Image (cartoon, rainbow, N blue to C red; front, side, top):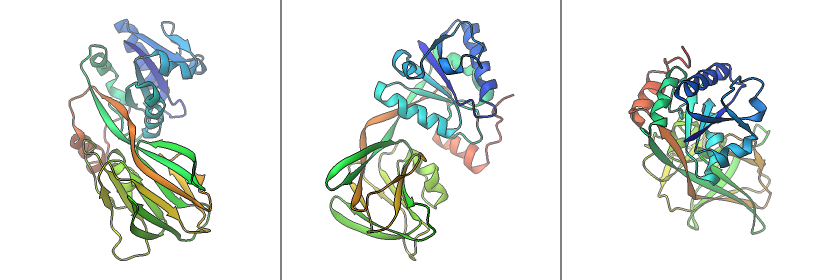
Length: 288
């Protein structure tokens, strides 16, 4: 097995956690790769260095070191190559992490084949203008429709399978995967959904209505979100930079054909993680 180490070195603890992983791999005699851009910061004489894009093609497993954003970004990059990702927490919450920063020794389970792969459903968000698809995005967590730079309500019309579901006037809406149910959607009052369940979650954000509630759709649903004319709405996929939607545009959100594959080397299950990170608060240090 050849492993790629992808740290987000803007994170305070990422450098130390990555060095601990390098030390562990060296002791185990494992084969690992690091991006050329990190060569000067990571002294790893036994590593193979290559351009960052090449890591996804030539390695069997990706280890992303950082917070949830780092892990999600790596998972989306790995999707076209069908490579699984192990997240190691060097941030604060890192709900997507399979290991904490003080658990780097457990990568021996990965090398020994003692691990499971969770295949997480993705969303595909396609932006249409004048009937043509002008942009397509994959989402691990969510597609968020929100106002762009103005403190005023946005109006969004939502259809499912060609039938009107609701009109939403407020700060916006979140269309999330079950994985994303513990992200922004949770903060907006949405339910927690076991990621083993497939479906599409719609959560309104601060709507100007008395009875607007989250809705959960079947995984084969086709949701169409259309902003009102002059609505000045942007689309944010997994918290990436927003894309202003065309005045005559609409966005079609469906279950993607691909999955994001996350490695689990510990025996804890979804609700164990939910309890430790969201109910009690994450009291596990990122590093020793």
